[in-house]
Amino acid sequence: MRADFPDFRLGSVLATSFTGTLSERHGDAVERIPVPHRLVDWLAVYGLDVDSCTTAQLDLARELRESIHAAATAAAVQDALPAAAVHVINDRSTQGRAAAILTPEGQRQWRLSSASRVEDALGVIAADAISIISGERDGRLALCASPTCRAAFFDTSRSRTRRWCDMNTCGNREKKARFNANQRRSGY
Image (cartoon, rainbow, N blue to C red):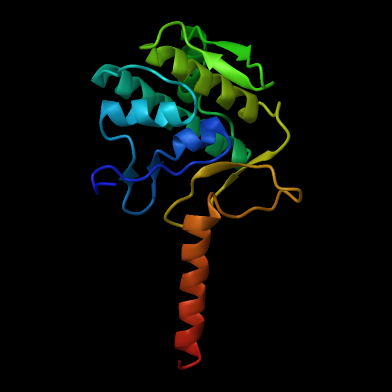
């Protein structure tokens, strides 16, 4: 993957994975959807296939992403939800016209109103955010323990004590830093 198009950080929860398209928010931020066609790529990974995306639609997506992040962060620390973020999430949810359908294999799939309807895909993401922020789903919102990341994630672990948004990135990086610090302290 080219350096200007970093790999996506994928998770099992649509809304919080979408907020992960901007990572390292408190360090050297990494924008993972820098151009419209990268949003098309990300949506396809989650089964929300669209044919195209305009710069204006990318701006709507980023506004939704930041609104979900703000609301999820507030919910994770049990603060009041930011009114502006709630407004954007609700607007995107009501503007989409996607429908859930059942596949012959018994899986849920989203049918967008047309192949180029980014707004429908954003509506699905907003609806997912509403379900996790409102507490409808089994799990809890938490913030990554990495001081440079602080991403909101949805913890569905049995104990609900997960510390990292992604063990393969933030968790390993933090554990490696601790190991190296211990090695320096012990003189190795």
